[in-house]
Length: 443
Image (cartoon, rainbow, N blue to C red; front, side, top):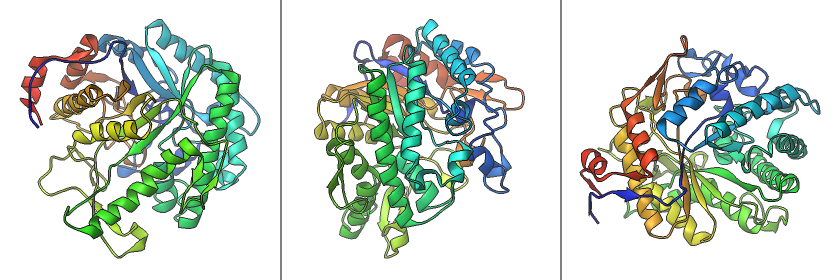
């Protein structure tokens, strides 16, 4: 269906924000497993290291002011476990005070914080005893979460327990190219179980401290689809990947059932109904072609020929232009759990030259608007990201920022797409002129 351009108004009170991760932006996070990983030759693309990152530990306020200039009313950020608990059971209250200052700085500017408690990094002391492979990690995480929320709850009421848990497992244990570099399918399933338990314990710990808190997680969604629609094998392989990567986690946090291959339908009562909202990170859709190789879960992933691509990372294009997928995510979840609010906790594109970011942004938001019109309870959108930052194993090689950053000088330069997002946030709408200029029409 084709829709001619018109002004697209979003619901009153809609949150317009950006998203960040502590290790990406703070700088000098030297006590976690990612800093150690960065020191290994070849671990990070081009040999990059995070070093001072965006220097938020020393000076976040200038970027907070940029959020105000853009008209944003929300920001999603994470706290760094290794700063708060540098040694097991020893909490650094100066680090908690630093986070209090950050949250207070956002509040004073009229920006609502959403805080992520685990965004891929953990203290070296935890890694040294096995990290998430060790069942004791669940209790350690609960202790960290409870201490952190007690210290910050007067400044935040919206919490994400774990960011992209299945990306963490896929890269660390299925593929083994991220810490802890332990490719082992059986161990990976154990880690998923531990992460589910950790999420559940964190959920209950937060509500014990702050009964009215809103707690969820940020789930990465790839929307695997068969490369050849007529191929039953392609559809089967795509279904396996969706089941393991997307459906098992979400369903378990709804009804508490650990489904195969993660479990044998045993029920964890602590896990049932452990989200108050759903956070989705969506960038693109993967197309799957059947393979008899079980190590790739019987399917090779790629983008369709002729598609529009983002900038390339170490392994090729990061994403393929597929904005309708964002609406599909929202519609599917709404059918699964109709009353639960949805936040788009990450969406963006690496585009160093800012050739297409504005068009991709508006196209994704236009499809999100359609989903809202169809009854999806979407409450906010967090763009990844405000300022170019250190992108895990891609280092400084992928640039997602509305502002370009020179990591050496720390100079920021607004990209033209920042003005487009600013106009949308200020007006709580995408104007018909913007739709017409960037999309012509909405497919």
